[in-house]
Length: 143
Image 1: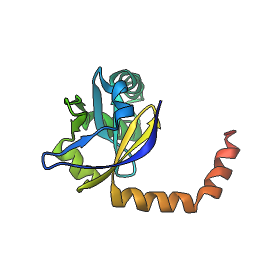
Image 2: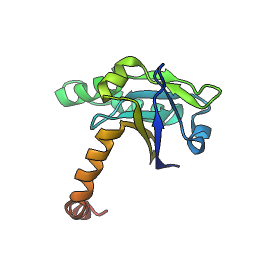
Image 3: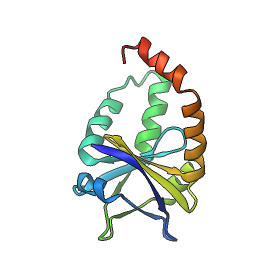
Image 4: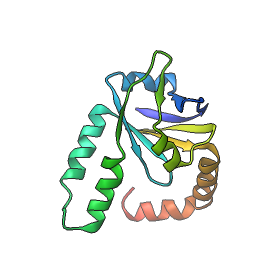
């Protein structure tokens, strides 16, 4: 399980340290790709294979299916942890997520999300402010 929220800095080469408690999950390799809400997603290879299988099974005739598959698959890149537990975030993904110096690395059970610190703070404020409404909607879904 990948859980928690951590503050890190991008170095001058675009590398970010992965929290020590997450590294074991990524030792067999990982994939970084465009995420949602201006974030990046990092998946362990096994989790990525499961998601990619679902994406390629989406109906090609539906524009939204094609668009989402393109977002996730075309932007994906293999990454490996270096000896200091860092991954290199490709330039095009740093631009996509608007990453500056300070970033947040958040564990969301089966994936890691990487956010620009300021973007994460705005997102959290918005979401926390609407938490009652969100909970009510999820309650209607049986959660």
